[in-house]
Length: 540
Image (cartoon, rainbow, N blue to C red):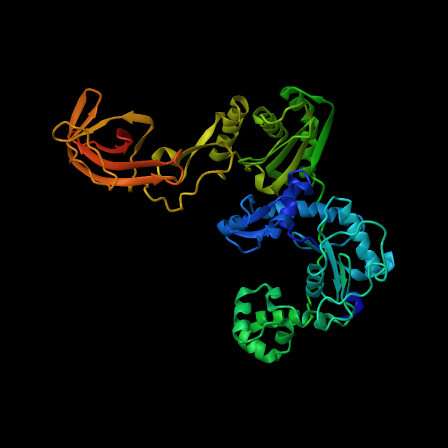
């Protein structure tokens, strides 16, 4: 490739950890042992965790075995992208036209920035110093003829920022060879530059896992091809015949011929609004009144670009720096009044805020085209009127004053009924699709008792029926008694054991379920727990 096509990549190692730390108050939050988990496996970890043996791909229990004090955090791609967009905004003050390759990796054509700052190394050092101003320590820069090679160069540079004046390669330690057959590629601090025409030599000793294609990596290993150089040496026609066009594209990457065009991002409009109070406000009503103008500006700014907000992040900071942050949903779209309501509800529930409110921030998390939310041509539909009525009721009664039922997962019937505030996503509801050993057999009772309804199940001799530790009943159930009323049992089934948290003596729970049909032809679901019988539901 020509020098005009050279790429500069800014890479942030373990970006998911950095993004989480910045939402928790800064880089210092990740100074401990932290791991980002996705589908039960580690996808990123802090330096402290890596020093204890934690690595990407480990299962949660294996990682905790290496580091018992490990803090596990669920992966959040939205958080990673949102925080990285702010970093790119900062970098574009130094040079425009950044491309977001993925959260944690940004690219820009190297020619323009190198000519402006006096060289590729000087340009890379300017970007490193710019990132250091954000308080981010782990960052590297790679420069090469194409995007793939530049990414590999950045990932193999030292992950510590050099803060200060730009240094020449000679001042930073001279030309340093890091890999065999790469005597012309040099590394200075957190910068690695592959000279023009040396991409294939730089990539040759790298493993084929760099292509991030598990199926291809497995196949190449079976064929004895373990490095990018060996893969690049294969005939293109044979690669196409065996692996198709996808294999040909990966073959081009291994050869240092990444032909992907640069796609500079379009900076989004500034839709975030925030206001500071001086002096801080102590009463919720004072804050709600003071942000009315900001709420109007927030909604107007969205309307100016023909958008509406359907998911809103509200951040409130008190005078001591404590932050209350929450994402709110709306069944239609937020107007100024509904924004103010959310801020009021959030402050009313933010018990951890110890001081007066010093700042409020509004950020749209999800937006939609305004045309999708216009009223009907002739009249509003039933759903629109229902949404409007329930939203107004919620504004009067409070956030949890209007709720909707949601079916959740669980072993107990009461756990499977969850009330969610109107307009909220049931994100915290336990999924029903999980396996629930000990859950009641279908069909479920139509009536579920919210509180325990004590009953007695007696045998023919009038003695309470018991179940041994081996699950054997003392005698067949004969009578169902509730208070002074006793009804003969005509049929029964069970017991079905339930064992929860048996490893925790304080929270362990062992019980047995029975289905019984009494002489009134009423079917019951009853439970024996700690030698006490109670009715969980009734089949109406």
